[in-house]
Image (cartoon, rainbow over all chains, first blue to last red):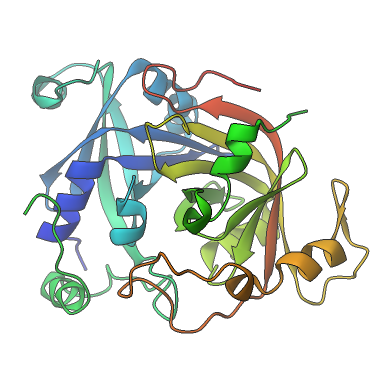
Length: 154
Length: 161
């Protein structure tokens, strides 16, 4: 199945930013944050990264493209999801310019683009770890609406 | 060797007691990362962070094969609690030998104090549409912290300890 981020997921991700985790090929995890995120395709998140933010993860990412994403701030509890995919770092070109141009307040050194392939529920309890990308996008949307309808900013 | 500051100890408590929601990051041995938010957090001594093993799945699987772990403050962020704690963790589950030792702490002392965490510090501040219906604690994760770095805006990546 393909991933189509819901309107609610988009709202939380874009308002709160994200914690990003990568790992070396040997399995050493590194965590950084991006305070600016945009949904650039139904299954893609782009992050404006300051120099220090990308510096934490770039060495590992250059050898291992997997990125695990959790929503920051209140989104850590309200947006109970983990997103996983493969990332690439850009410092020039149209995609870089487009994100840098709208990332107000961010000294953008690089843009990290993550193409998502996995989506998990992280709500504590029976649904913790439930894989959602195996469901059709419409089913994921209905599943979420049956549980939560809060969209920040709306 | 790290030594938590009083501000770090205040932050590494359950949110209902003025602490923080945290993100816990692990990895498979092959390098597939995992990150999940956790509410039950505490410190032990000056260099250990405790997390309840209540609903851990991938995190538990990863720690079974790879102790490398990082914990970052998730919420509140940008309020002076902008840290990542990095080190090696084990999930001390019920059934571990009481004298099992992880960098100077014994399984028994951890489980005796924190083994029924939902009773000790019930999740009263967690919204009803998020809170779990019934706790099912299987152990306590102990992270021995070896490095602390910043995720403060403008200083991210700078080593603190």
